[in-house]
Image 1 (cartoon, helix red, strand yellow):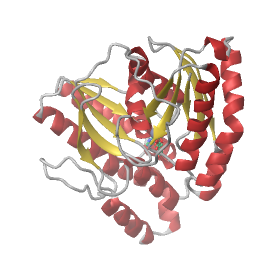
Image 2 (image 1 turned 30 degrees about the vertical axis):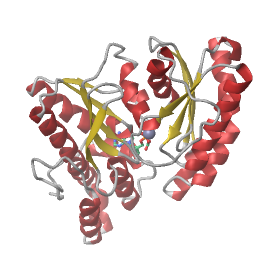
Image 3 (image 1 turned 60 degrees about the horizontal axis):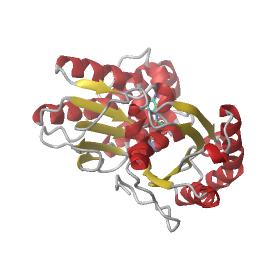
Image 4 (image 1 turned 45 degrees about the vertical axis):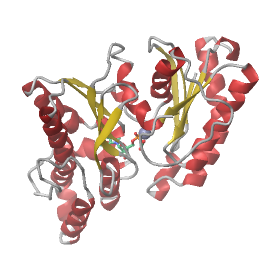
Length: 332
Ligand code: KG4
Ligand code: ZN
């Protein structure tokens, strides 16, 4: 049984060691829309309110009881510390009271494992592009535990770039899905927004220059013009965020002769990204893995999937386990 409370989604899942998902319940928190971003204190309080209810619901839906569960997994980092602590404390108490193993999962690694649910045979080596609201990382996985972060964002994360643009255009939070929808009918070449760090041997990302360019562009246009051209503007922004992600991933894959690319994180739901990555992987004979849409955003099934190897190898945490908010992929 797996739990995810690192940001603003409370999620509880039950999964077996063959990656069959029995249930994957997600309670999101629309209250943050009113603030244009996640309010950490509200998020923790809502996790506290929802986690017991979701756990009971997960068990009743699958006709199981806590006694039937073999181990409890929880994401412990990175994320909002108050939110993580709700999940970690709750799951520690479950593991203690049922005398079952406790498994700690890195949330980012969880996103990568969302890909195992539809592809249980997937194994490293692979190159992972992990793009979410807080992360943009290009990671060369040689084995499950041995990896190298070969590119990262120097400022905003890719999801953050979508969210900030959506805020400027009053499209609500999270902004990625809204921009994805509007951009479908737009021309990505309508505005030539800048693409940062164009050097071929540089695999880092940067979106702060793009943000400034968008602010400057919008401040020079009338509201009428923006409204009339919102499809073209969002399509141009989307391309400016996604093009460098895809280009750098493919460049690195070609340079290091990778046979597999895995895309993960909330932004992996983006249709322009999925299509573009698909085209270029086909062209370069690279096998591409993207999570099913329902598993792109934060969910507990991916945390359960990341716990499978740990469960099978007896890699358990003890009750001194704590949450920590530090960014990054540190495997625990
Ligand atoms: O992985 P996730 O659910 O949470 C974090 O761990 O951050 O990712 C959320 C991010 C948000 O920034 C959201 O705008 C973005 O993923 N996102 C998208 C799409 N769906 C979600 N960005 C672009 N296109 C989408 N379709
Ligand atoms: Zn996430």
